[in-house]
Length: 228
Image 1 (cartoon, rainbow, N blue to C red):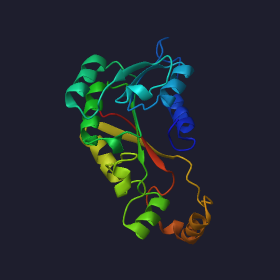
Image 2: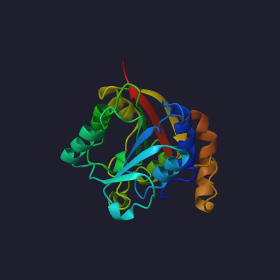
Image 3: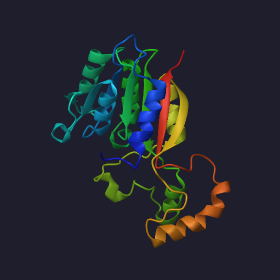
């Protein structure tokens, strides 16, 4: 599991609320997990009773047992078109968890999700919270958003820092209604990782009431469905 602390547990709770197992006419709800990585979340959902199709470029890293796996480059428009042709209108949930920031065109992926989705399909997208209180401090000190420094371009491969305004706009322009934004990941208000971060978090703490927007959580999770 290569993710922020507690994120998968938080996602499981959200998914269980939006797409409960046992409420799809007796069949297993179908989940398309785009950019599934090693398959930890795919495995978790499969074990809970979902039918899961994991999609990722790195076939050699996939370790889940049970979910179907499709090796696919989500930067390749022709490959994505193939996924749309195969699964359009047949999935209950589309996941794009910690993948948008790695892609050359996040907009294109959301456009593909629009073609994949039916009116009943739920879309769950997560991105690093570039407006978190820590990212704001880091930007003040370095001029870079947390997780999007020059080194991050190659490892872990973060090439797009997406704000809430941008994500809301991309969802809207691709026909989705954003129903909920949930801050997730375990970002403490007072971060005692080491003495430097502890000191910075204590200095920033009195300014929290002045901070607007989504200042908590390492990750923002966007729950959306197609508009009327």
